Amino acid sequence: MLLLKNAFLLQVGIGVTANTFLLLFRILTLFLDYRPKPHDLLTGNLALVHILMLLTMLFLSPGPFESLRFQNDVKCKALFYLSRVMRGLSICTTCLLSMLQAVTISPSSSWLGRFKQKSRRYLIHSLLFLWFLCLSFSCNLLFSTVAASNVTQTQELSFGNYCSLSSARYLRWSLFFMLALLRDVCFVGGMLLSSVYMVTLLFRHQRRSQHLHNMSLAPSISPEKRATQIILLLVSFFVVMYWVDLIISFCSIVLLAHGPIMLGFQALVVNVYPTISPFVIIIFDKGIISTLQNMEQKVYRFLTK
Image 1 (cartoon, rainbow, N blue to C red):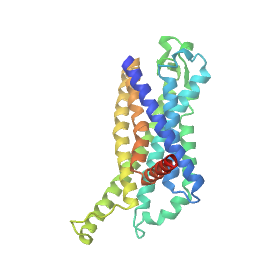
Image 2: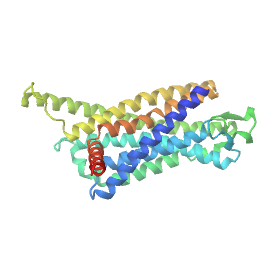
Image 3: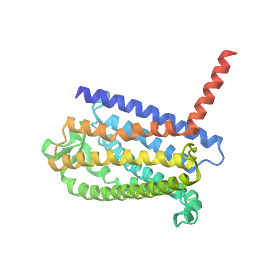
Image 4: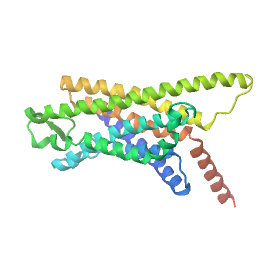
């Protein structure tokens, strides 16, 4: 348990720092650029979601906040509800990012190419709809989640040291859980379909490029192709971690194995994607790298004067 706690704290610290940097950079881009890219809005929203997700998981898990003792049902309901909402938004935003990129790289003559202008125009509306969808799908947790101190051991299904699910409302929670699972499966399916479509387009583009470029020359990678590779990497990583988390959650629900070790290990698995994703975006984003390099040069010139 001590090893799990230390690993969890390290993971949350790294994840919050990286996502905060990415979010601040996207906010700065919005203020400096009058026509920000749609992907900047989505990655900024994803960074905000992951910050809230990591912080709520930190408060719900045993560790440095153990002395807070969530005796109040309101605190427990709010934190557990927020954690599930942020998890759903992480799935939905990643799916929207993948589908938007599939539309962006589609040929203008294709069926998806007709939605290029519309996708940018209704991006804000899509984000608001996703927030509303995730907020509404998890509203049952406001009624079924209670503080662990307010129910007996035989009347609760513990999901942490302090927050529990009343067994009297377990049937209703199971129904909403299945609906949320159906929502997640649909969005993960959308990620996979858009990813397969993008891989197919990249493969076709690669075959055409071989006829136009000499094999001895290395053609430069276009920004669209680079963005597609980043999103494909994010989606692939997310899908793997999602299925690992789903298998762990299914086994723990069926076997009623909600012990501290199982919960700690599951928290580590859930937080892998929010922790790694900002690094993937930052490292492969030429805009961020060039900005950091320019800032480094300006600081160096200022110090050497």
